[in-house]
Length: 171
Image (cartoon, rainbow, N blue to C red; front, side, top):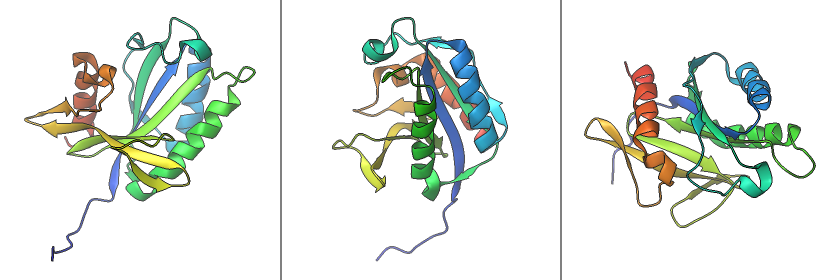
């Protein structure tokens, strides 16, 4: 039988956003700040051209941004954050189409975890229709991909962002 050890219950909240309209991003970011506190890292937007998954709904010319928050969060509340971001996305609907996609997750010293409403073989059910996956693993002083990692999350640009955020989490 394994011995239960104390685990750090607080992790670094990271939110990825895909959008076209900068004004929508700013409004969503302001709402996220109200809910989760001070943003401690926000790199410049990145062209989101790794997939056309969102184009039918959101159009072409999409951008991706990541933000992280200085206040650490309890892991067990992660599903609530995804439920909140889904409600926030709904506030920016244009007809039935989203104008922003908001993907929360967390980072600890060993991994980057994203949450989703979609089940798959590598995802673990949390609660209320929300699943989690280990998107990146931290090995040999950097984040690295898993077999299921989205192609954009494997790029040097994204990995560099996550390595910088990890330095904020574990200086």
